[in-house]
Image 1 (cartoon, chains in turn red, cyan):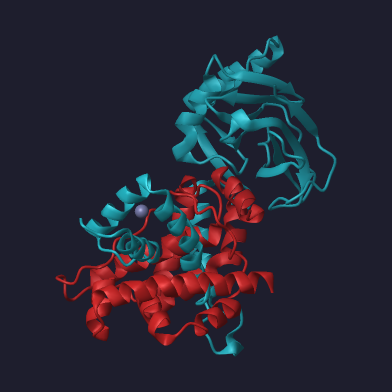
Image 2 (spheres, rainbow over the protein chains, first blue to last red):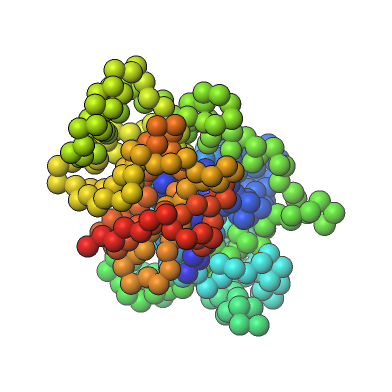
Length: 178
Length: 251
Ligand SMILES: [Zn+2]
């Protein structure tokens, strides 16, 4: 349990601005980093960061407990997808659907891992698995698009993504217990 | 759909990663409702996907060469948050202005037999507005809070200077005669969830100059067995740092 975040969110629900400030201090680097990777532009990433934390303030009930970083990353990615959608010059390219923000992500196993640990777990994956995973998550494109771009059959891409995620889970479990 | 189950599991991974288009995502969501195998796979992969985000966490210091968030973002957010929350009256202590009818409704709920108090109350209702100086009330919540407080079925537990009100699943502190917090300190509410050994921090607040404060302390009243208030530094504490001003047991 990420007790700190749960306590702070309870205080946010009780309209305690200082609790929001503490959450910002602890998690804004995650939000901003994801937004920068996805949007590649400072002012757009700043807008998303601001939008995410104002949403935490205005709709704290969306957080149903559990993995706070996972929840806030999901909110961030969804807002980045919206931003990509609105700048999409080729509307015939379908962007992936945003994921629900009001469901608890119970598993907090990796909530406290730092960036370096996750990066080294990612680096340990074969490139043919790592690349479609990163492209799918940060690139804001569907796996069909990934298959097309990389000239790999759709079924193969799907299986590589799944195998890569499973392998990544094992690597992250190793990082947690290390 | 003629997927074999293995193909469905592939789609579950894509759903967890968030690369499915809307129609496919809906199909997977429906399937997750009915299939334990896929649900377990999904739940195993979601935190892995969340950790992907962590790989991009921006650095805390610029010397590392990676992206650093501008401190102006925080300033903008907190200005927005504090602006929405309060109507500032003197720039230093922030006040929320309530119309008289709202105060009437709230004070009505403070059932007290004291004649003196009622005289004071009537006196107050003649004023055009009453400022509440605690930090925990926000305009859009006023209506539901007032109806909770005025609810005749609400459970009320007396505490020094006011009462704890449990109503419609919410828990409030309704204080009408609370001394000012010591200089440089605030009051902080705490709740004790059922089965818990430690108090959980709730809102910080300061009463107005009449000693009035209405503070929402929890949205899970059913599972809260006690409410306490202590004196804490501004911003509150994770654990109480002073003996409680009072503890109210709810049963
Ligand atoms: Zn299944």
